[in-house]
Each structure stands twice: as C-alpha cells, then as structure tokens.
Length: 286
Length: 311
Figure 1 (tube, rainbow over the protein chains, first blue to last red):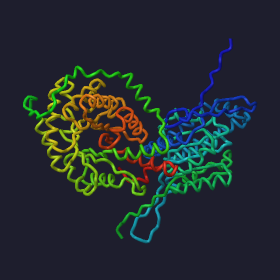
Figure 2 (cartoon, helix red, strand yellow; figure 1 turned 30 degrees about the vertical axis):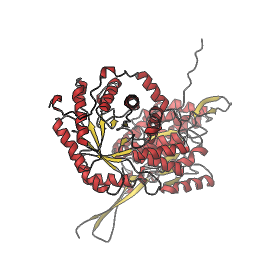
Figure 3 (cartoon, helix red, strand yellow; figure 1 turned 180 degrees about the horizontal axis):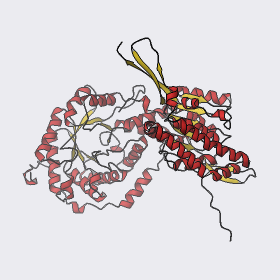
C-alpha cells in the first residue's frame, strides 16, 4: 500500500518562531507543470511590523556578541546548510532550476557563508583607521552596525541571493527582516529552519514571504528600520523606495544587476554598506 | 500591633462575610477575556480609544534608583507627551515614592495632573501599622492627592481578614482628602476566588480604587484578574450604590492591550466608568506605544521610539 506523502507547510519566520501570517492570506506556488507545490504565506504589513519589533529587540545583544562568536555562528549556518544540501537542491529543482544549476547554487551559498564568517573578526581592522589630525587629539574611526536592516532579497537566485545579502548584514552585528523571493520562496523558508538550528539568536534574522508590490513600501517607510537593501526593480521602484526611506534618512543600498553566482559578488564592502562610521576625538597631551 | 487597637472610623462599614462572596468561574473568565481580545477596533474609534488611554495613564516610576532628576523627567513627559501632535490629552497622574512627591509637586506646578504616591511600606507591606500610617501621612503632607496602598497579603492569606480590613480603614482615615487606591497584589493571591474576596474586602473598607499589582511581582495585571475585579465592582455598586474605580498596573505596555482593557471595561462596567476618574492604567512604558500608534494612524507609517521623548 502506498503511503500518503506528508507535505511541508511553509510558514514565515519571526523572532525565532514559525508563525503563519497574521492576515491568514495565502498564495499558491506552482511548478513548471502548473501543479500546486505549496501554499505560501502572503505576509502583511503587520507581519512586517512584528518582525521589526523582533529584530529591534535582538539587535543590541547581537551587536554586543563578540566578533568571534558571530563568526562561529555564521560558520555553523554553513555547516547546517551543508548537511541539508540534498533538500535544498531538490527544492530549487522543484522551483524550476536544472540539476546542475541547483547544485551550483547550493554549494555557492555554503561557500558564501564561510566567506563572510571569515570576515567577522577582520572587517573592523580593515575599515577602521587612526586619522591624522592637526591638533592634539588621538582621532580614530571604527564601524558600528547600522541597526535593523530590511532586505528585499533577489527574486531570481532565491537561495544564493538571499544568503549573499543576509550574511554581510548580520556578520556586522545588524539584525534584519528579509522579504524572500516572491516567485521562488521555498528555499528562504527552509533556510530559516537552517538558521533556527544554528544558534542564531531569535530575532536576528526574520524572513517573510509575500508580494513585493505590497510590502516594498513598508520596508522603505518604517521609521524603526535603519537601512533598506534591494536587489531588483525598475527605476520607478527605486525612486519609490528612496523617497519613502528619506523620512527617517534610512541608509538605502541598491544591489540591482548583481550576478550573485560570480565570485565578485562577495566583497567585504558589502559588510561596510550596512555599517556606520563612528569617529572619536580623544584629547592627548601636546 | 493587633487589629483590636485600630480605631474604627465613625460610619465605616464592617468587614463583610467573605464566605458569601461568589466563587469565580475561571473557565468562564478565560472565555470572556478571549472574546474581548477578538474585537476589531479601527479608524476613528481606535484613535478615540488611544486618546482615552493616554488620559487614563498613571505615569509611574517606582525604582530604588529613582532620583529627583528622573522624577522631573517623568513629570516633563506627563506635561509634554508629544508636543508635535496638538490636541493630545495629558496623563491622569504621575505615581512616585513618598520621598519623591515634593519633587513631582514642584515639577507639575500649574498643571492639572494628579500626584499619586505609593505608601504603607510598598511594595511588600511588611511593616507595622504605625509605620504604614506615617508613610501615608508623609506622602499626603508632601502634596500627594492619591495614595496607592498595599494590603498585607500575608495576613490575608493567613485568613486574618479583619486585620487587613482594619488597616485599609485606618489608612483611608490617614489619607484625608486624598483618594485611596488599594493594591491587592493579585500575583501573590494565587486564585481568582481570593482576588474577588480581597476586592470585596477592600471596597467595603473604603477603597476609592482597587488596583491589581505593585508591578514588582509577576504575574502583574492580567485581563483575567482585572475582569474578576471589575465584576466585583459591579456587584458592589448594585449592593451599595457607590462607584469604585479600577486600576490595572504592571505589564500593560502595548496600545493594543490597553484597547482590550477598555473594551472589557466598557462591556463590564459601562460608559460611566470610561473616564480617568474611574479607570487608570498604572504603566511606565505604555504612553510611548500609544503615542506611536496615534502617529501611525496620522501618517500611515510605523513609528520608532527614537523619535519620541523617553518615558
């Protein structure tokens, strides 16, 4: 007798929990043969609000963790992803990738996590400076995390694009709310399960699924979000994001037209894009 | 000091027979509370509810680390909730320790904001009646017009209801013209039946308000406990014709929860109680959440505490 398959319920990830959207709304995800793969939560602005609250709560603790620990945790994410490599390949294939493209994407995602894990206790030295000033001051600049970052992940490379934007954000002590790929949302939610089993503190990463058109404006306008990162969209979308972001002078980071599969897409400067420079003037004897 | 040596106020009522206080149906209370939380309050009603909430807040600081500066800051917050939004009500009162009453009085000079002071060996109430009465008088003499006293939970739990009753009567006398709020510290009473009994006792002893918690014990205010107390107030009103106020305190920090409480108040006691004269929120961080929600209603954009003065 054949057994009934157990389908996975894809839910959103907020504050270390997997709730359904508070709105109760769903949209069906189809495969290439137009079969329904899963019902995906259509996240609402209130889900986003709740996610920002969780991210804000987690931010001081995450920023206060040592660089070494943050690196260890991101390395751990890579380990967990490696262990579930087959599942992620299967999911990408389900969403239309070829076998070889799927394998390549999952491997690149794991490697990218390792890359940024390595930077965790190094970027500060590279980007910080002792500045020459013509007065009797010891003057130095160091980086501090921007705070809560909204990431609108790339729609196309749904796993690699997500990882490539998430890792440089959290390695620098930020917490984030991520809007997953709309057309290929499965990998993001399975990745949330990986995060969940990797000692990432609750609230550091929050992942929503839903419609970009509905949620992009919320990412840009929320007064308690300190930076917004986006990777797709027309000039019109970019203008809308930047205009709404001006209200609380959010840091706006555009990563449009990036080929996330290339090695050039990993760069310590991506870490710096969600950091603030603090310069200290310390008086010294002449 | 034994209860026998407490002078009885002329005209004060006697300790009621608490064995006749009805039992509380806990399952029923839970179900009713769940229904209050499912009400949808939108747009104009929400804005009115939020403004009403602001006007009912007793802005509170009760820390061992309180300084005159902290109390002055709190009073400034009470006066200037968020000046860039005109038309906001001010809070009902600030609530401080007796030694900080004079600081609050100076800071609130010329403003129609009450000064509430905790007294009677707050928060434990573990002291002699003499000290509790002195504590009360010190606060009243310094200018407090509302006194938040704690009941002796130990005596109550030991069944010495008369002592608890007499203490409240004596403190009420010491209050003079000041309003008396009686804190039951429901988190230490354990069951809703005891909450109900303590409510009846306090109201008969002359409480102007009954209040859930000191904020020092968890759980503090819950909707279940508050509903139990509201029902006791209803029955007391039908029995005696006297209105008693209600003050949930501790743990109410979101605007949404405050609106649930208002729904419960409206559907239990009705519109007559929907004023700061008869209902208060004891809270330290509720005001800013309400302000952020009001701003959200005005602008359509979710707000950040970064843009509101500290409370």
